[in-house]
Length: 157
Image (cartoon, rainbow, N blue to C red; front, side, top):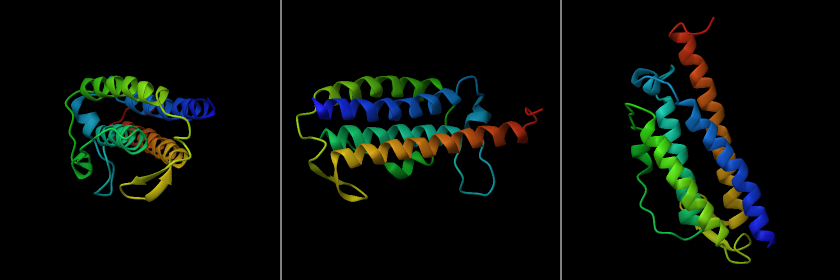
């Protein structure tokens, strides 16, 4: 029961960050979704949302819950969106899948070591910490990117 409560608590914060990040895309035009601040190499709002959703899927479903997943991480940074609906729909489906997977975590899952694809061995609890931190970081970047985009396009007063 303790693992379920802990996973649910982490999930509330993870999902809240991703919900807010995906929500930033609402009402944006194709140009606004894909606008990038200077310098070169920065990410658009669409890229940030695409990457954060994919990272959440990989870490929670694949690394923590053991579901098979093939991810093309580098392709996420080339993502281009014509509308926010595809990423919003992807997130809605993924959110439900993750909630179901977390509800089925076996006892001790958060103390069990897992092999993270880039970070090495982590406990299930550490994986949830990594995801929560990652989602919050990208939410902050998205909020700043949105503000910079509005200023650059004259939407700020």
